[in-house]
Length: 63
Image 1: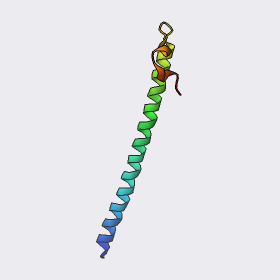
Image 2: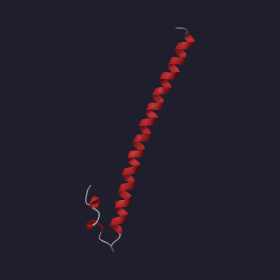
Image 3: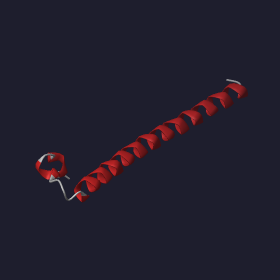
Image 4: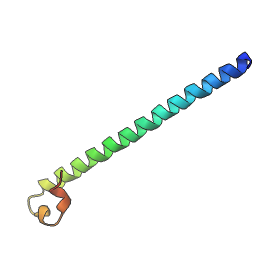
């Protein structure tokens, strides 16, 4: 292998690692965002004192 091919393969390998790390970060952020949204929705629903949502929404009692 000549030097140019080695350099090209090294760049490809580095780019692949960066892309893999970026993908993992995106997945982690998406999971965290969904969890925060779920907590936010739950707190907003529980704040409403006029309607007893626990009777109708079983997922409020979970977690």
